[in-house]
Image (cartoon, rainbow, N blue to C red; front, side, top):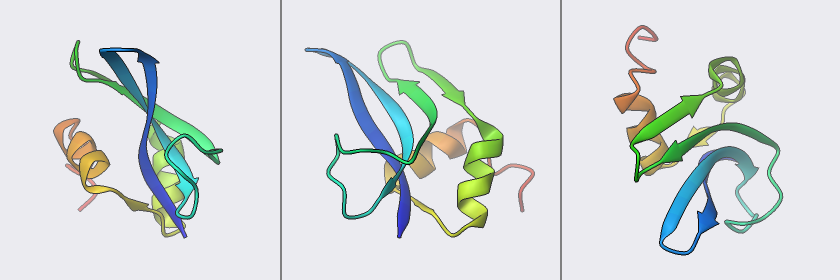
Length: 81
């Protein structure tokens, strides 16, 4: 099963997160299938690859709670139903 979840990057005390499609059995820093965006909580910036996210969601990928909240704040689900 594939999930959309956060992968930590950046320096100590200055974390940024990549939003990745990754197998459930992989660890947080494990090998991802594809990078689909990033989230910077310090600058409050979000960059999303919408076609890639839609592709994985259509294939049955489940976003984690945090990724779901990030997508909701970015109004990703606004016109999707």
